[in-house]
Length: 195
Image (cartoon, rainbow, N blue to C red; front, side, top):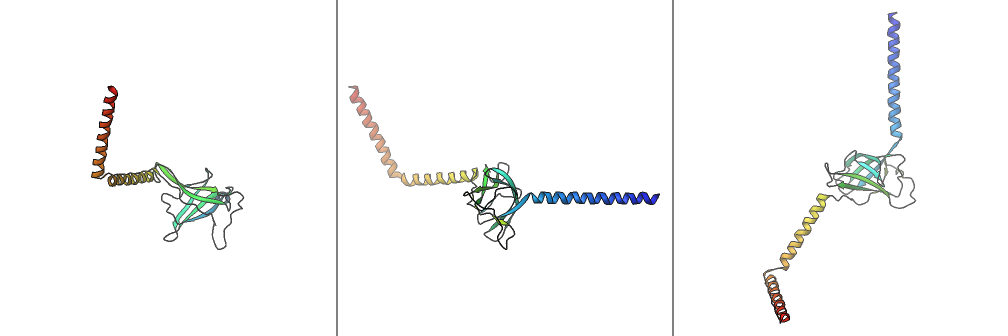
């Protein structure tokens, strides 16, 4: 009697282990079949772009950034994990963009934006010898509040320097003399009209 209970327990354990393994494999391959990996390569800085960042196609989220890594001193590789039904074609162009007040932290984030540059593209396929199909990139579009303020500050400094160069002591003296003459002339006109 003791042996049959142990044998039944062993068989129940084996069946449960096999069922759990089958469920794990089905889940793994089911999730994997619903997504595809694409590659971006850019020589522009990708500050703030992190793994898990959103990938949007025409404003609709279709995936996430899987990996960001430096290939060499000038080239960054970005791997994207996208839904298989995302309409990525040969005319699709990727742009790394920023939203919010800053490109890092709580007030802003960087994401990848996909758009069709022209109608009529065909399905994007990987080239011979490459691991992933490569989506071409457009120039970086990451203007944040801190960048705008820095540019505004530079513009104000340039304007002030120009004013200092233009309004030297002689020019200021001449302007004051012109204003005094205008005041005197308008005073004389007013007194002539009063008479």
